[in-house]
Structures are given as C-alpha cells and as structure tokens.
Image (cartoon, rainbow, N blue to C red; front, side, top):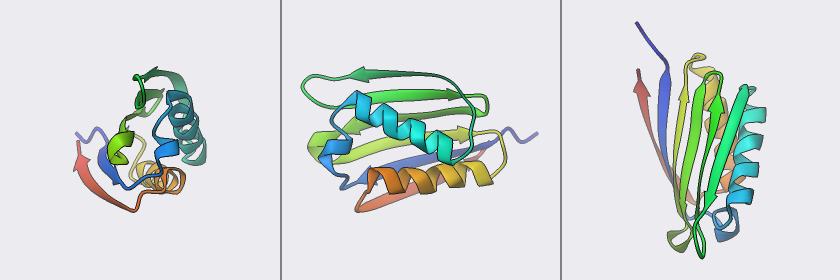
Length: 111
C-alpha cells in the first residue's frame, strides 16, 4: 500500500526577511497551500528570540512544516501529501517562488 509522497526540502540563501518572523513564514506557507490547491485544517507557528521560526500547517492530505535559520539564510521544509504526486510538486514550486532560495535540495520519499 502506498501512503503518499514526502518531500524533504533544504533551502539555502533565502532572503533573511522571509525567515525571521513566524507571522511572515506562516503567511507564506498558507499561500503555498492555496496555490497547490491543498485543504488546510489548521496551523501553528512559534517565534524564536531574537529571530527564526517554526511552523506547521495541518492538511486534510497530511502536512507542511518548516524550521528556519535566518542567521544562515536557510530553512528545512517537509511536504507530506497523500493526494498523488502532483500536489507535492505544486507545493514545492510555490515554496521556491515564495522563499526565493539561491539553491535548494529535495529528497523524495515514496511512503
């Protein structure tokens, strides 16, 4: 039985302004969810002091989570989706557009 696709995404060289504040990170993740046509069922974020954030969006299809390191201009993102292969790829495309990394890596795990 196949459960879904899990993308493990590392972002490098992101603008610090998109990584600093949990409100910004959560707003951007919510726009990723909308663009990928996923169904949000809840969200939560946490602001680290002085900068940095972690956030998760619960989806009917599973979840998207992020942890940021503004001091390194980097973030780690999980996109897990049980709605086929297209939705996680749409979410990834939107994520890259929103967080503007200079480079990134993706590990695709079929679960």
